[in-house]
Image 1 (cartoon, rainbow, N blue to C red):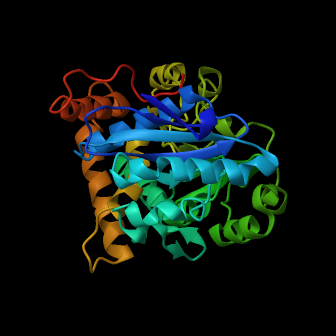
Image 2: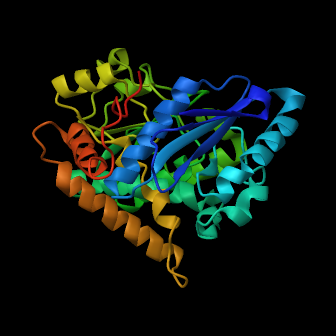
Length: 343
């Protein structure tokens, strides 16, 4: 279901009707495609179903550029205020949108403000996404010690992710940004990565080590974490993957054909709607809960889901889909058409 706002310049895609509430990110760019927003909403629906929550995924887009951006976002925020007040759509900041942009809606959002906490320069929501990714990998491999990792599409949550993985004993031996790829078989120091990101952003690649002669997807690693954008790991890229485990670090990085190629090559892909589930644990917390309490709950919750699906005969991804769909069937007359994979 698509609802338009701001004289057609913005929209909200809500995946399921009859949900207790819908939640999703708001993105801003010159052109946000509704199809991609609907795909993001579907992935979140499967996250909620995996956690046995009767909630719907959603995703919003504000189409604006340059000087028109502040006015367009302000108009969208004003227009959706009744939806937020009615608990129909709760927005989170995505690409091009900051927490400050959505601040006028904060008083009507019932979720805990703990999710906005800044933790050593990293938003707590990003830290929890990294926590859930690391927890899913650790459970799958029965530990992280000595595992070689490639992170494709290092972004703001990349700092938290490298710290989580390194804390478990993994080595970040390759990573990429929009500026290129860097690799070091001995491992790239996570503190050096964090410092380079703070100072240089995506251009940090030139300050961390040599550039390999192969793309990031073909890195000789144990774990590949695709993160740059929806559908970045197509069947063509999947044919080059050498990692035995693919663990998404962002929503919907793998296409349906990419998944088929990975399965044929015996590369295990974890479900993005589980590896990225961590932030949900910060939405409803006890009054005296600490960030470490929330981290522990997210870690335990993700590990439990992975335990349920890891040995599924259809594979972990499809097993997790079936698990989520079993819960959806308890409150939806028909299942939504299409599983959470990029086109």
